[in-house]
Length: 438
Ligand code: 5AD
Ligand code: SF4
Image 1 (tube, rainbow, N blue to C red):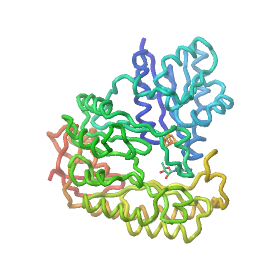
Image 2 (cartoon, rainbow, N blue to C red):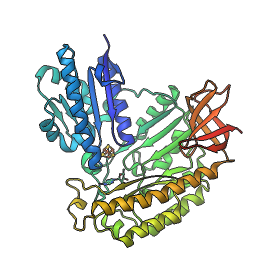
Image 3 (cartoon, helix red, strand yellow):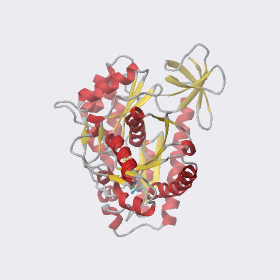
């Protein structure tokens, strides 16, 4: 009988990609997906360590899963419980100490070995811990990616060598690694053959990709655009320091590349940017935004922000607000600084009190929300292409995404999922745009 696998994914797109690949790795063992942990023969929590809140959620989930596992055991049913991802990598021993009923703890770089770990856990009857950084890249051992739907993530790069002082990624994901171009192109072609129309190439620092001598991310995107069936491309997440001239030029020259870029700035204060070890200041970011918009005038920017980084004063925060007002972002993620064990900023003086962080976050988010709203309103009357990717609530309704990632719904009999259609935006709803055929 088929075995059932339940995966819960926390955190970033890289984890979404990894979860899909873990399912691919386990499929030959007879595991198929279920959306309920209660009837799962195996449960994987694919965890995130980026902020304390994200990491703590894992332990509360484990408490619930323990009860389910015990209830199943009482009925003679198995449940292999695995903790994967960045919490496993950073706190593997702690996971086993606090949750000794966990069977497998594995880091982001070892999941190609999951079949062995499952066998080992069954044999040994004790927990298996594998948080190594193997010398061989896991990508060389993964089966062909299976696509679900019209959009797919494709990991081309992993890890980070930039060492921003707030960030755990260099420790949980390891040193920067770029996959070779041939492997990336082959995976993209396999996805396209399965019906994928839009690929988002991902990496923790994706624009540092250097998988082929003489190539950069721009060259790779240009090659990806030539694959039959690929109509739209995106990439995320980028570091401002790694935006090369040739990559900027590709925003002008490659129509398949969507005019939307997530380019985190984190702060608008030069003092804080230095303390964060970002390697750029506010003027450099501003110039970068200008050059991108010269290359692609309809480009919209998205960003991440951290408020309450150690030492951040009211004046520093005012600099962030001023930069946001000046640049204008259409979609953003903003967070209170969260000290992460082992990172330099966690040990810095001048940690900002929680109520100050909260007040700053609320003020920043109010401004960012107004910008998103204004952008959505400005889309009304505009024509844009939408990739239809899901059925809607009504028989003749389909849902999709605009070039700017906005969810769009349209009543368009005769059109099909997977079509890229030209629509006119007719109205703004709380969580989506309504469109009519152009
Ligand atoms: N505290 C708060 N936010 C953080 N981020 C990364 N590390 C931290 C931290 N310690 C945010 C950054 C990053 C996004 C993925 O998460 O803004 O771009
Ligand atoms: Fe979270 Fe970073 Fe790990 Fe992604 S790479 S899951 S954001 S800690």
